[in-house]
Image 1: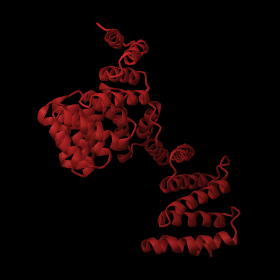
Image 2: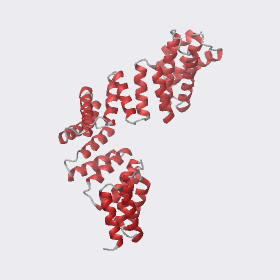
Image 3: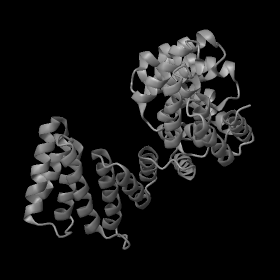
Image 4: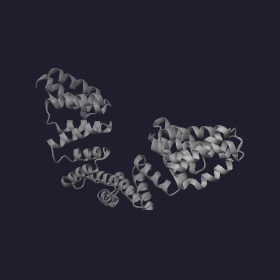
Length: 377
């Protein structure tokens, strides 16, 4: 056996024993001795990926494919890493090459379906799942992905059919249960949805998707304390995104906990500012100011009202036709005047202007706002 082959075999043995640093060293030696070995580049890419070096893995798999374009696993692995990084077009291209090399490759079809769904190519995603199931009828991942694509495409009945099929194939699989739970929620079966999410979490307590879906259903049912618990669990699982913070903020607001709601909306705005988030935080600041108007000495009422006005300003800047923000900015400005919180004649005039703009955007809002305008004098 030549030295390059011996180094490759030693690298493979280290890889089999999860000794990644040693595997990389031996495979690097094999490449130095014979850079034409596509498998050595491929295997080193696997070892690098398993150590968290995604860039190094992609570089190695690219080098392997330059030497042997028929390496299906290299196309698939590079596509999978790119999918995880959100490089959707590149991922789709890689999975397509893997499928061209192996048309019955269910894994590549399922992953391409996932990537296509994220690009909103729902028909393409469904077609890929159909192809995967033709060759592998028991692949629950394909059914789950198809259910998700059908939900996104608005085919709620089809998603429920897929959810039921997924659970028949794998009765205790958390992905299958969560898929059916989501479909049940969409079709109005909230009790069935909660039951499925509970079963999914019994099987896998840290399954974030099921926790998130259950939080949404609990919010729809007005179970705000339970929703807060689920969103808090998501944060504990490391899912600190806008949807989680927004959802928990709304639940806190409905519980009357304006302080916690304001904190959650502030955290969400730090991630991705948007008109709805500014509007919601402004409403929670108004909610907290109402406590001060009611006599709570811990609330700096005027400060909260002016901060709420500023949030409505930002919402309107981002969405000039945001009727609710115009209306609520007018209300907050009126509160400064009516409640003696340092409101000026400029605030009075600005409140009237905001109300008129809100009525222009939605004439049905006139009754409530005309009452405010009368109170302004």
